[in-house]
Length: 210
Ligand code: VGL
Ligand code: ZN
Image (cartoon, rainbow, N blue to C red):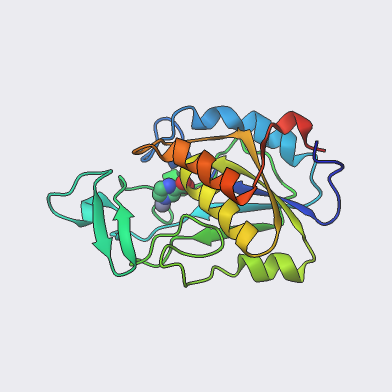
C-alpha cells in the first residue's frame, strides 16, 4: 500500500496522446485502454501534471529524417545512440493532441518535451542528451511536491525515463503499472522492469493508490 494521497503527492500522466494510441503514428498496443483507469486515478489526486510529446517536423528521432532508414533502427547522434521512430506527435497536429477522453480538468501543468529538433526527450525531466533540463524538477520542488506517481505511455520509454530521473532528482517515485502500456522494442519491457527494480522504484496497481 502507498498510504493516503496527500498535498505533497503528484500524479504525472505521461504522453497520453492520439499518436500513441491504436491508429496513431507510433501506436502503443492497447494504449487507449488505460484512459478510464488513468481518469479514475487522477480523480484521487489533488495535483496532476500532464506531459505532451511535442516534436517539430523533421525531428532527428524520426526515421523519415534519414534517407534509407526504417523505424526502430538506430542512429548515432551527438549524444549517443537514438532509436528511430515513425513520425509522431508533430506540433499542432491531431496526433499530438492529448486524448479527448482523458478527463483531467484539474491538471495544473502540461509539460511539453521533445521540441528541440536535434534532441529527443523520453524523460519529462532531462532530454536524451542527459544534459538539457525541461524545468520540471524545479517546478515540482518549488511547489513543494515530494512524491510522484507515474502513469501513461509508453511504459518502456517515457514512463521509464521519467520515473528514473524523478528518482535521481530526489523524489519518492512509484509507477502505476496497470495504468501504463509499453512498446517493447528489443526487450525494452523486461529491461525497464529490471532497471526500475534496481533503483527500488515500486511498480504497483492503481487499486492500491489513495
Ligand atoms: C515515446 C518514443 C518516442 C514515449 C515518445 O512517449 O514513450 N516513445 N517518443
Ligand atoms: Zn517522441
